[in-house]
Image 1: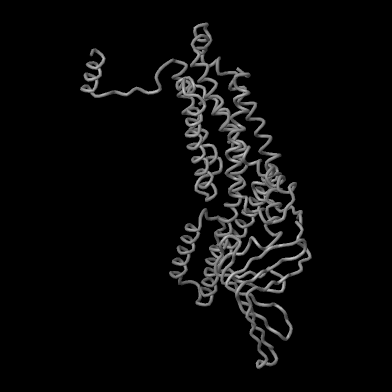
Image 2 (image 1 turned 90 degrees about the vertical axis):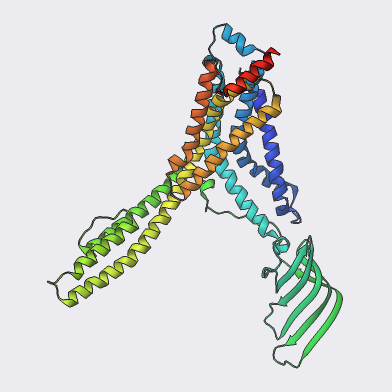
Length: 453
């Protein structure tokens, strides 16, 4: 069974990685073309981005592998032979479950220690590549201010050809220069930018004497700008996003936000006690405003206190209303950040656990599908994986918006997958059809007539 699973797993994994990698390459190729990067840097950029592709490809490869392996065993009647020998279906899939568990543990390690570091380095390198040269950052209609000594705006761009080019000098001298050309290109050499303009005009104006003005027409004008740092500068920073952290890092961040929420709650409790005499912390913004409204009604009906005391308390209530709005916005922001880290923590474990569940799903699917080969197996696997991934993304989105908890958002797809896989495994172990269709009586009569004829 291990031999039956191992080689198809490697093959399926390589095929999925290749497909995802080609899609990524087609999207990202513009990031380093025309940048003058060396081959080592390009290979490093591609290698670092393989991390998230591998994390996504492994669970799908497990599902395809299991479906193909059990489909072939069923097609060759080996499943039937093992059952005839008294081996139950649950015993047959036990090695596959162990294989899935091994892959799960390997993916847990990969997601916790290798993936965050590679994501971090990939983001740093991508940012360094993006800033290396300005020629890829020119968008029509946007003012470009990162060209030395000049500002520029273009009307359109077709490939490398810019149209309706307008350039303004940044010099603080006595002469103000503006250039207009119908078309132009921006290229780079070893230590300079070369701006080549076609069919345009140069306007020079003496700022101290407006009568001193020159207008020069040209068919071709070349501007060479010396740039000291065109080489790729590699940054080193400790600022990481949630997808670039290990579980201990994210737990520390979550605890930090939890402490901040506690501090805000204590501050609100003291403010309520000072303004209303009640130090109970309201559970929501609405309940806090309701309590302030109720206290204001009581205050309006109070005939014991003098007018100056009532005015002081009214000012405290107005201050408290503003504070409540600010503090609950702050709490909501902290909770969103806390949930975001919680989502990433659970995702590092829920996706690897899905590998075991995909074994439990793929084995009965393979037995039921039997013939079909790699194409059918891949199609069925992709369909189930797409549904699972959509559920995972939906759960992540709802958890990020604090609609559900990170635990519910990240583990609900696995629970649904477990229920489907358990049902299919149960009916396969009992050798039953996965579902039965009760056809109408007249269709049954027509079916019997066809069979007799």
